Image 1: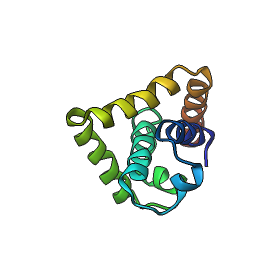
Image 2: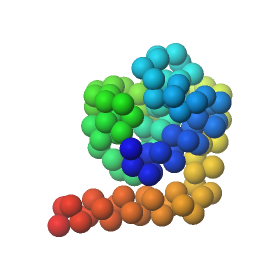
Image 3: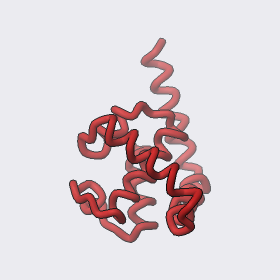
Image 4: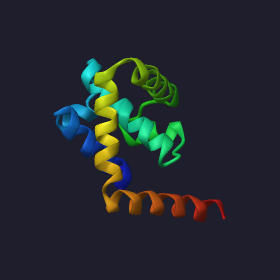
Length: 116
């Protein structure tokens, strides 16, 4: 797992009050799934990672599962205050960390090197 994905997961686990083991399990409870969806959406929007890479980072989910999770979360955020509050809490913690932006920059630079 990339350092960026690990950091996003750690913060999501903290906000959702779950363990990393629960997060990485194949459980489909709404609470745990929502934590995964938050990570996937942040990695997609901030890290600009392809859906397939995100799925592999978090336990071999296929790209369709990741797409569904991101779409579902985007649907819930405007209509569910609790979902919006948890998602915003994760972003607030992450975006306030200098280490987070360093990891994003390193990820982008790594992608640019591969493409060159």
